[in-house]
Image: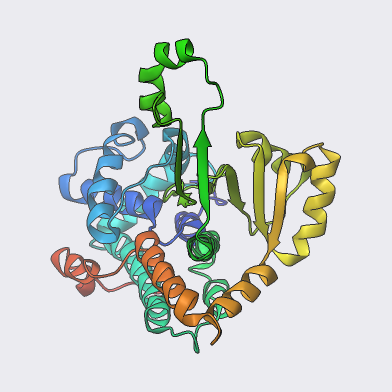
Length: 352
């Protein structure tokens, strides 16, 4: 094996880049586990385990973190590329894992355990928070200060924005109205089934009203440039915590098929984003740019004595709910470690 290929270094890089669910490290661990248990197959032959290992991973991740990967097949297969864990490194890891009684598997699952324990402390902060004790910037700092959780900071931004926006929109009692202005009886009759199925209205009742609402697109794994939230009042919301370039800004706006877009970003990025959007001719579709300072100010206002009963308590309830939905718990991990006897496997020097 070439001297510049270090299986542990590559494994640590994958663990370090992973979010708290550790899908790719779990896949590596399960490939090593099955190779050690079943024997007789060659880790240098990627095709012999490339697809089946996704099922192994999903079975374990569903148990340990309550979710399975929904990333594209292309993104999932990146794990086998030269800059991640190619077959030559898998073969090397398999050899040392077999000789060490599965300690590489144990190392991976103990890395997951460390991340989940750190996450548990943050969840406790959110769970026990009151209008007097909660700080949005403090919540963010828990993730930025922890190397193992830093990759998940974008999801913290997303759930914080969603909880805040939903709480305020509900408190404002905003409503949207859909109304048919065309009074032509012939077209109303010919397309009545369409109106009922798609618009939810008919010729007799040509307008409907509903509370204004926001929706998260869903819990995802890979860092994407698409839509984070959409609203039934026509606004699309994109939350960004990273620096934008003219290319990525154009991709974000170009990929969102909405006339009005709200971007949430870091304070230092606002001016740069405005300049970039003007340069690429996309500024007209941006309804607003909201910064971390804006979010923090609105959180403080919601949690203030003036609004805590009306807004603050619901805001914290929504935040707790979204936190539980987004991030896994560690309930199943310790029983799993005992079943596999990973808690008994000693880690050699350099792997602790």
